[in-house]
Image 1 (cartoon, rainbow, N blue to C red):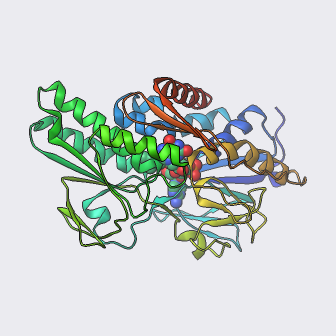
Image 2 (cartoon, rainbow, N blue to C red):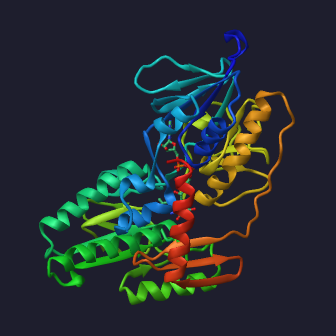
Image 3 (cartoon, protein in one colour):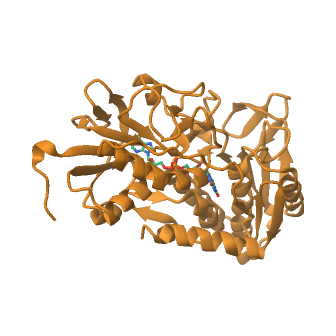
Length: 385
Ligand SMILES: Cc1cc2nc3c(=O)[nH]c(=O)nc-3n(C[C@H](O)[C@H](O)[C@H](O)COP(=O)(O)OP(=O)(O)OC[C@H]3O[C@@H](n4cnc5c(N)ncnc54)[C@H](O)[C@@H]3O)c2cc1C
């Protein structure tokens, strides 16, 4: 392949190895642009696929099956990979600042797909005493430590509290319970030493889903003896319990924090236009509303005129269009807008190789729904293997 002279080369910098950026790297591997230098910066070498994380917790997947090896994917696209954390953008000089005292990284065009973190509501004890679900690599370490504890002393009562009543929190509570109960049962200990409680500030579980899904999940939680405490906003976290605004105190031996997504502070600090929550504001082409050479997708982006829930499904769908628009921007061509449908297939695993699915007002459940989810997830991740 002929390569362009250095002075005509353009640097495309991808920040974060999220679900949309893996599609961008693959698109450049499949159809390279010779005059473009592609670099991916990500905090972690292995990118978890969020759809398979609850299955990993439940014991149905291995780490390698549910993660994408970013350096290897970059090799396919002749792209550079650097494991580093971006701390800000210098938009005037078109540079990304990175942690560890390294020199800033120059770009002509930059795209951000760094995900989100669970909001701790300003509560001091969350990261000290709890296990936040993001970043997923840290969460998985916390989970491994908890499994070690249970394996060492399976007969000890284990009270697990999951804070967050969205799909992520409910799926996590069910997956954690399934795995810990399997662990103790294999050691001939009664399942009731494992007690799981779900605490949510919202009045209903999974408020973004239709009421049939809510009813099915409520029933499944009851059948599995997972207690759910609704309309309970946690206002204090200590080493042994969470206290809610109603005065209810819930003791725990392990605490998982899976609340609403919050934005990284460096977006606003860099001077990029953001929404009220601090997420990077983009138009329907995934281009920043304030800086035309900045693009963003996934949880970190907020399509201000066409908002979408923070969910891996949307990050996955945005990937191919983001790739197309980055390519068009590099070639000086008009960008293509995308309106993602609000009605989409949503599949929530219940830990025991069953799942609850929905699309619009429909809801369905069963072993076949898990099978469908497993098939869709494996097919998606296989593209990046
Ligand atoms: C337990 C759990 C289960 C979930 N299950 C589902 C599900 O079944 N279906 C679904 O649709 N959604 C699910 N979600 C939501 C889903 O995780 C997110 O919506 C999705 O991961 C967002 O994808 P993303 O591409 O925006 O970013 P992410 O997948 O979060 O990827 C961000 C990447 O950027 C890197 N990064 C972050 N900050 C920096 C930085 N400053 N510098 C460099 N790199 C950085 C990270 O290391 C990571 O590789 C779940 C979430 C949780 C917590």
